Image 1 (cartoon, rainbow, N blue to C red):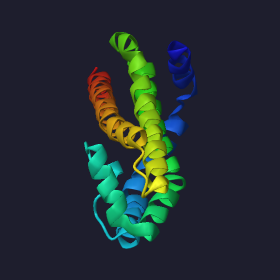
Image 2 (cartoon, one colour):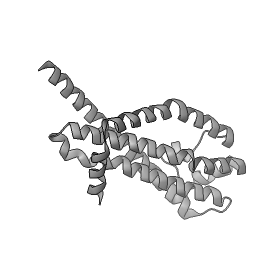
Image 3 (cartoon, helix red, strand yellow):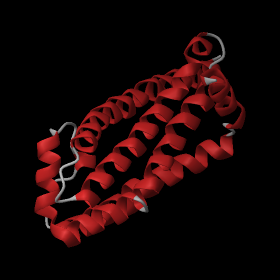
Image 4 (cartoon, rainbow, N blue to C red):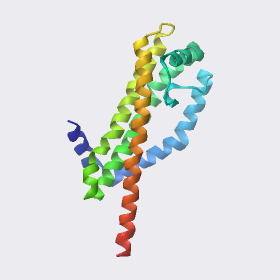
Length: 187
């Protein structure tokens, strides 16, 4: 099944989709993320968020829920099911399509690495799992659902490792593609 997903990503990763995903990602980083951070701080009264923390304990997540207050928890939940549904799709598309696009153009040695286009898909999936567990825990407050608190605290570092690891093949392939472009122009 995973090979089918990887092959599908390779098939759909056209130049226009790669450029569109790059522009969309740039737009999110420049315009949407700073505005969303400001709104989150205003609503919750805290700069701490499970989504932007590499690791936290279940107790720390519960403490965040307490610090947010009822209004902040509601805003957190709403953000997770609006903005934070879209952003994982944006960065997953950017990374998976970009990796796939470069693999297509670096035929030869890059073929052995084509399954790396699945790393961002896994990262985005864990982001959605994190959002689900954290919002269910927030909505349960003041109850302390240990399984949800623990799941969220487990999914978060896995998400960050996978998303971070996705940039390695992306930038390696960008560099290799640029080197090939320079070599072909010199020949």
